Image 1 (cartoon, helix red, strand yellow):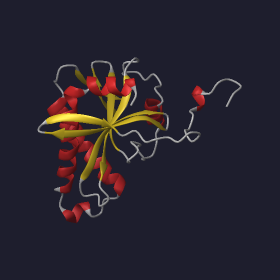
Image 2 (image 1 turned 30 degrees about the vertical axis):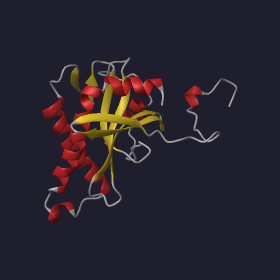
Image 3 (image 1 turned 120 degrees about the horizontal axis):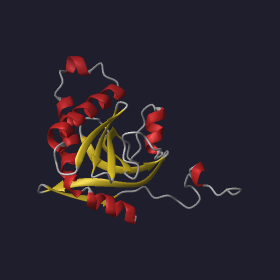
Length: 190
């Protein structure tokens, strides 16, 4: 576990129960759709619907909490927490990566490119959920620190007796297999 991860998750503690409840609620609302209509939905449509329900939860249950500001940066809906962390909401895989079509704006967000409307010093994070193999229940709720296409760290949120706890579930990288972002390579080196 990194110091950065521990600091981020401890700072986000007031919001973690909401993230957990929100993703479970959003998926539950989707599951209540009439099967006649939802049967036509592909995986992308399902993820989009669940994300929309999560955003409604964020607007109704999290907006107004101390330090929370909601942002809309050219259509990218974000939660700004005290100008230190900016989160977006996505379905992710077990490694914490989202796998939808990557837009230029999404790439810029993931690569920490300065974007108008986002506090420049704020760390960008993804609040996400992973479905079980059948796709009928949320298996895990996660917070990921993504840089480029790499997941730097990954935290699973668990709620026990209405109290959030988190654990480090960052995938282990074997020596020599870590992808190095081109921006961090030494000039003239590998």
